[in-house]
Each structure stands twice: as C-alpha cells, then as structure tokens.
Image (cartoon, rainbow, N blue to C red; front, side, top):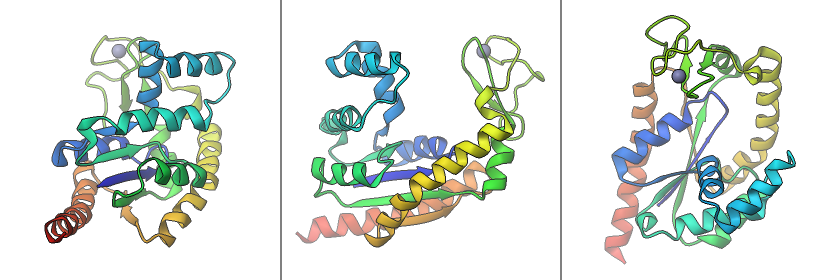
Length: 223
Ligand SMILES: [Zn+2]
C-alpha cells in the first residue's frame, strides 16, 4: 500500500503522517527530509541538489523523483510507505506510477478551510537557535515567548506573516487543485476534515485506512 498525504501548509499533515507511520509500521517519506539528508551525506544526487539550491533555484523534478525512487526501493518500504510532499504535480504523480505502479494507493487529503489555516499559521513561532517549532494555540511553549529546549527568544518567521501566508496558500491551492482532480478521477482521493484536535483528525484517518488496508489484505489472501 502507498499512502499519499496531501494538505496545505498548516494542515498538520506532517504530524498525522508521523502518527500513521507509528500505527501501521510504514515509513513516512518526506521529500524535504530526503533532500536535506542527501545534501548532508554528500551523495551524487545530494551534491547536484546542493549546487542548484546554492543558486537559489528550486530542485528539479528529476532529482526529487530519483531520490524517491531510491528511497522506496529500500526493503523497509516493501509492505508500504507514506509519501509526504510528493507528488506535488500531475507530472510527478505520473512519474510515481512509472516508478512503482502496481502498488494500490490511497490519497489522504487533509482539508482545512483557508481562514483556519491563516489563523494557525499566523500563530506559529520558531526558535532561531534550534529551529524548534511552536504554535501559540496548539503547541505553546512552557514559558511565554521562550524556547523549551534552549530558552532562546521565539520569533515569527517572515514567511508566516499574513500577506505572505495568503500568497503561499494561494500558490498551494492552484498547484494542488489539478492533482486533487487527478486522484479524484482515479477514485483514490479520500478527503479528511482537518479541523479539530490532532487526535480527532487522526481518528478520521484511521477509519479510512483500516478499511482500505483490510481490503488490500483480503485481496492478497485471495490471489
Ligand atoms: Zn531552541
């Protein structure tokens, strides 16, 4: 089984991905992490990516696809895996089919109204020293304005300011609308209400995945 996570910035899909990984024993593969790791390990792909990023450009599809291809060839992914941050476009979704086409897939779309996303993202604070992320509502620091880990003064990232957030969400919607349509047509898209607590949202996801994985299991027994 392949699980694809879709969700806007602030939808909490990363947190849900971690919970899913724990419950089902599938690795969560985040393309952001893959890239950072490849750069750190100075692999051939990592060096290529680093050169592109140094010029301030976006890493192209081929590199990201190659990283995903390498990662899902890992024996740890045989039973299943969770993709977070890939695919982002219909072209990438098609590439994924080329890479690993036979696997049944389900797309979990964590849907949150944009005004709720605005609210959540504008309450985000980061630690400039250790990069820990807080949310003044959902995950506040113990001491107001101070990092729990290293006691530095928390700041708001410039890309979490209202105008920038609005623009980021707009770009995200335009990008993913087509991808969502694509998976809707393939009947693999499952919308999940992304409002409420982390536990509430996770229960909705588990409800969908337990059923899908049960069917997948039955199909394997039959054949
Ligand atoms: Zn810190």
